[in-house]
Image 1 (tube, rainbow, N blue to C red):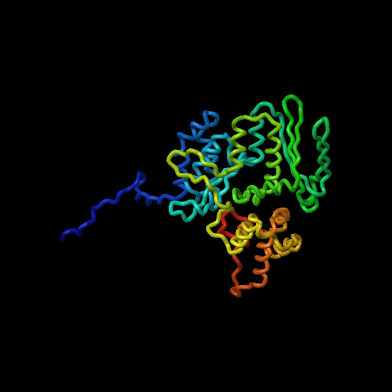
Image 2 (image 1 turned 45 degrees about the vertical axis):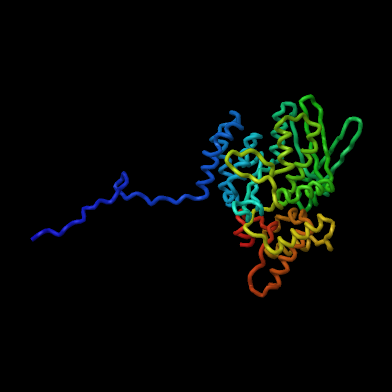
Length: 375
């Protein structure tokens, strides 16, 4: 009797005798890693000029990008631009006290099809400016702070210059300290001289209005922006270098063009906002009313009671208890949109049982806007 035939075809095996694992599909994260570590290596190494190790510098940059889903979505050109700005100034993003931030925003003019895309924006922090001035070798110490309504504060100007005395209650809550009424910056020079610059709340609001549409940083880090305004105004009294001048130039125009080999990076920035795939109807109303206000054709018709608004927000989500300062810093159109959101949520005006779409400036509890704010 003949033996049954056997299938002698051998399956390919890996070194341990097991079939090889299926090939992993390439992801957007892989593309970003290739962009930063390979395609941008030569131009960034040139900008770093041996001041830092490229591999470590790139690893820190990638850690920040990969930790934010919106940054991963950003165009290659904008990521390349932010990476080169970071290297040009030798200011690193990330860490506990970052020299700069990477902010994702939606640019309606970007994208290969012209339909808009996420773009990354390089924003210098207070610590970044402090580091740049220290590098000059003529500034021993520099610091800035905000002044709240209930702080003890005195500023005297005379033949000995400006003298400031500021006594905040470091153990008071933000509510007990009151709203921000101004900021200031001080520097101790190597020759022993102390220079000081105060900034009123009116001037801070003007600085914020001048940057509207360029960066969402004022909505995200209001107090840090107040300190940065003071440091920048103090700069006129401080010894500066080329890097400091360039930093101020980039801050004035975060979408400034830079020669990024092999990439097309638009220099114009549309109304910048924290990245999101779409704007809610309330966001569109806010943008429309702001544009009307800027053209002098409209003004807020009412003042939103921030105490009542915060109570309403806490009723929606108790995590708003820690966001009193954020609510107080909203402009009237943002406050109006938040009040409308709460009203619609409480009354379910659509009759659908579904919550209304969340305005962007209320998305503070998650990095990915698709996660929403209420969990």
